[in-house]
Length: 464
Image 1 (cartoon, rainbow, N blue to C red):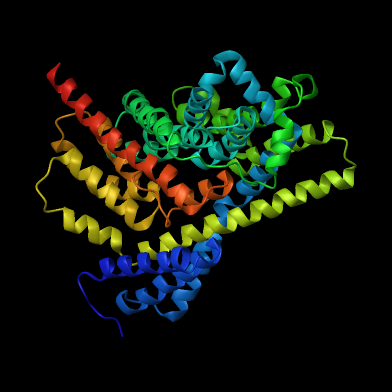
Image 2: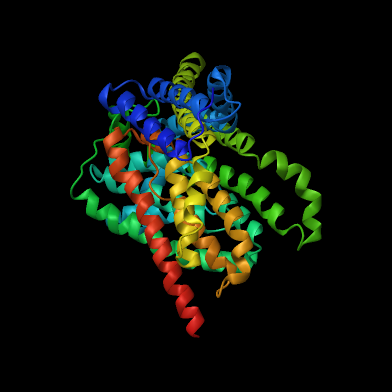
């Protein structure tokens, strides 16, 4: 028997939040176990309030959502584990770090990582960027002996900012299409919005937090801190060359970026259409990261004195670590999906529809609340875009500014129900508390800074 109650989605959200806090914070269960149990709890609550959501659905839906999550991130995370292990232990990551320091100086290591992650995230998904940049942050920490808090914040801030503001990243691209915003104008406004947001969250907040929170370098991605420190002290001549070291990153970015470029500009440049069948395959993140992983593994093999069996065993250890990360990430996604099934998104948007606040602020609020409630930044952005699309004729500014506030709202407060939270925690080697202080706070700073920047710039444009 289903209980009809107008505020049932809110009740489900509160009980779901209590469940995940109990499992992960109070009982301190392993993240995967706690998240799966919390998802089952939310599923059972849904059987009380959601029509056609029976006990079998409560059980089966968790498994389905977990499987869908693994389908999306399983191969990339496993291949990223190989990339991370191979780049770290071959010395490739250390060689790239030294290249950064040679160009910018050791005092600007954070700027080098921040700029690299920001640029890489424009054509590449956030998760792929973090997979590629986390080994560099860890190697930078091993090299300089401090500032890991700063390095992990700048990498996360750069990747997260471009992910929600700058097309052809899929999120803002889909929102721009939904509301009919010109792509060129959206890219231009996206860059203007992204730069201050990334600076505030990465450099300003990162340096402030770094003075107050010292995160140690822990064993992660199947690599120990002792191994990283040994590589940090190795002579540069005994490390792989710069081009070979950077090959996994360059390959992944080039392949994924080729698909994004062809997909975005085939209508403008007809000749590109002939390349589409090839880049659809090679530019798929599963294929691209597999190719990048093979390049990294080959470098590791060439620059180690291991036997083939020992090398294979090292790669297997990396896959074991990657499997745990993939399971936790997919479980977080399943927990968020079960919350979404409660109808919390529609509940929030309905509650805000009658509130008389400015259109841009209203769009930010809708995206922000949906994001906090159900976890996915992309889902929150698309939900808000669908609601706000009919309101576009009422805008007094270019629709590109609406894309920005929706992206800003969709990025706020990444926490337990966001798979990205667990990805950052596990790959970065952080505790839950450290992830909240770094990743959760920086996503919120990006959100608020993006909103303020958009309101200021849109007002200034109106005055011109």
